[in-house]
Image 1 (cartoon, rainbow, N blue to C red):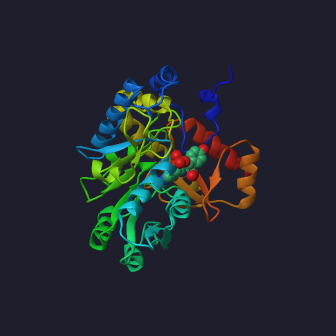
Image 2 (cartoon, helix red, strand yellow; image 1 turned 90 degrees about the vertical axis):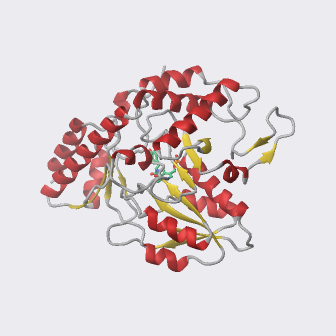
Image 3 (cartoon, rainbow, N blue to C red; image 1 turned 120 degrees about the vertical axis):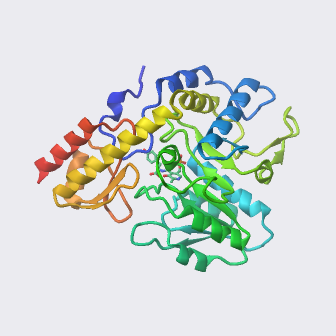
Length: 351
Ligand code: 0PR
């Protein structure tokens, strides 16, 4: 049988996916043929999904969360903007986000007929809230903040962004697709306890150690999710708020198993290890004279020459670049100190 073994992750430094927890793998297999999109027929997995949503709510300080397990962060972001658009009373809706927002927001804007207005970042690669506020007007339906950006792992000033949304009568959406399983163990202000957030993306299939596909959409209330509901005449359940119809029970069950196994101590330990690895790599690169972006979360960005980047890829390192061409290393749970040492040794060899 072909199977992604830990060895297969041994040179992967670019991905936001990782080796699933063993319990998540086993649970996924048990629920492979179930469809939480049909809760009237597949009651067990539908119940498990409600538990996952409750567990995610607990992680982000949201006592009675609404939401569901999506196919990933892209679907969750699309659906959050769809909620905002469907509720608003305007023919020319727009959304305001920082330029660091993931490309799924551009997909969402295209699909939903929204104008996406992106504001420049500050010098620290975080959302510039003054610039964001200037883009907001009476047609703004949502204001977006990112808690753990894809390129630099930065946390936007979420309370300020929520205040901008509130003042505009728009929804506040936080994209914590990647950062959400790390941030509970930091001092950042990013969750429902810190700000009047309406919706959030938080993905079990990234730092949550579930199998793919398992993304997460959370909403402050059922009423927000109702903005997505369509009638489902021939199903036992009367309406459906998800984007896809048939969905992966495997992803849902694996998310539950990973959360049971790891929340909170396992995730805390993983967060500490990932951050220590990122700090170690940042220091190692800095010592060698490369310009490094301070890793606020376990993601290191550094400027290395184009030829060096290409040579490392030739050596089979799975690395990626930011939009500005800087090396980007994501210290996911499968990334060990030995891997990083071997990476830096290869870098030294190329000098
Ligand atoms: N929001 C943020 C902040 C993200 O970083 C990502 C994905 C998404 C939303 C979208 O999530 P889905 O990909 O689950 O729809 N960020 C990674 C990226 O675009 C995704 C990724 C994952 C890329 C694994 C490569 C990879 O091997 O870089």
